[in-house]
Length: 381
Length: 172
Image: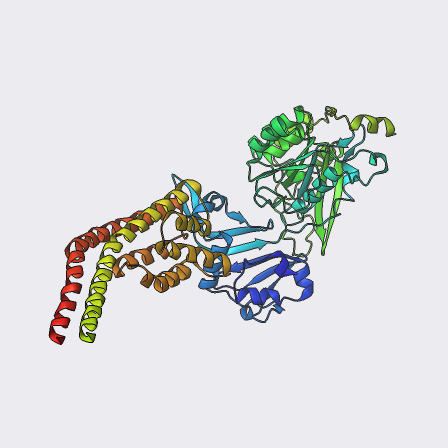
């Protein structure tokens, strides 16, 4: 299982150890954390464990296997294809995406250039995040975000803390939309929609030499490793998508580009890091987008035990919810900690909250003029 | 008659040894020059192409002639083929094993080995600096190799013929 998903990233003896992991951990593996001369750790099914030399799991870090300097050096070379110089841009952002869409976060010493991070050196910490396609995981979500009148989806923001499966859900949503698996009786005749994916981190499609390695359906175009803001504009200008999917929005220029796409009649499917809706309304850029009534639906992912649960919230409900909750939880609890409940925390600044209350309004969305959509609209009740 | 044939054989062998030695003296600066061309190409690949190292080294093999090109193609093949090998190990092993097939000597090998231990392990600027340094050293070696060529190429040729002649005279 593991050897299939991580072909030759790891070298002996690390590889042998990971191959001997218990089957249940191997099948649900999410993270492999390698730190030089420190215990080897894996995250699986929402839990974490240290790994001993024979591949068995343990809670005691003292008996765990600690990868040495040579192994880490060899791993770094495999990760960067022996060429640190060719991944300078990625190092500046702190991660490298390898074949298969696995993202490897790196920890080391930063090298500064005029006060900005130029790249990393002395890299001694790796966090290998295993990318998995979960075909069908969007089946329960998609009917909830459809825009039946326009014959497409609503502008949707998928929200969750890190590591809950945002990208996995986005990937499957893209696949369902572009292949026309709507899972809704009214949408059965719609067919697939043209989807444009701006894949800044190469995680959604895991393109290799321009061709997606994950199944994204027949009507999908991918701009690989492209900055989101520019990518959205390029998409709209030249690839005529009906739906644009982007991962992890949060910078001001992203919001501008999203607004631009919106007015070009394109539906947007985006993800963002946030613990809940209260957090969405607390993050400046997201709050602005939400206040402008950009998103028609929010999908909030949360995890209990090993299962991911989702909750679909419409814009109106979201606005009410955000205005109603007087205290947002600041900072997330670790997802493998037992649930702590809503501890009282810092109050959201009154001024910000008041302005959010006043300005939120849901706005009507431009209908998409797609020839395929017209008969479908007539058919739908 | 047999004596005459033997003398001819000795004369021929001696001359050949001399010529071979001379050819080695002539080949050394030429091969160093090729190495320098290859490094120049590598510099471009890293600076402008940001080509991954295995592919960049494979391209180097195309710009130079054998036997120097063999070194590069071996390194590149090895890097692609065997999982977990580092550039430093691979570079060092191939250069040590294959060096005897070339006419080059110890100092240029040292310069190349030193380059190999840094290759791929740092940022672009740093890589360029290391390559420049290696080229600088190779340039110095090329000058000395040309010097040696001028001094010893003709000499070893005539030495071969004359040495053989001496053996023949002693035998007769």
